[in-house]
Length: 267
Image 1: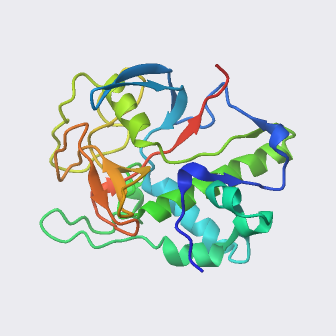
Image 2 (image 1 turned 120 degrees about the vertical axis):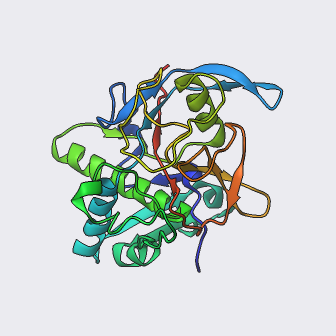
């Protein structure tokens, strides 16, 4: 039975105890910046936000590494706990899902149909575009990337005798808006007419590039009818920083990418 992937409430076991997980106090990845805790007005309500790490936009090169890992190890799998299901199930095993790499690969195939006057030949596979944001990936694909990335990082840390880190995940809508407002001046989108490198232009206040510009980005939030929330402007469409772009979880578009976050719980 197919289960909708709920990234915010998914926790990987990775065969380790909870007590071994460390909340990173230095950047878990070189492309991540710390978004400090704070509060801001959202829909006429004052909202408090805990600190978290946020990455730059995920690049074609990073996503290709994910695809190649799935292809190279088709018999490997990821074991995932759905915490919402665990709360309902008397049997712990009922909340656990195994995703084979082969099965994941079927879900995350890259969408390469740009079409129209903005078509870019071989955008995903050409080394020329290694440092450009990956687009044409669904919400579910972005979620599987986060799970795989956590698995890879903690596998390396285990081999080095280092404590494990908490999960990479997609940002919540609140986290995305908070970071975008703090990283840029004002709420107006940055107008760009073509897709550009991830770390292009000036850094924002938090050291991140192209928040609310370049490509729109998936968040973990879900609407009542099951759609997922996309935030931010892209090279193809301007959007207000508060605007909700609602798309099906399997939707793919050449102007939607993603970035991931990791909770910072030391404070």
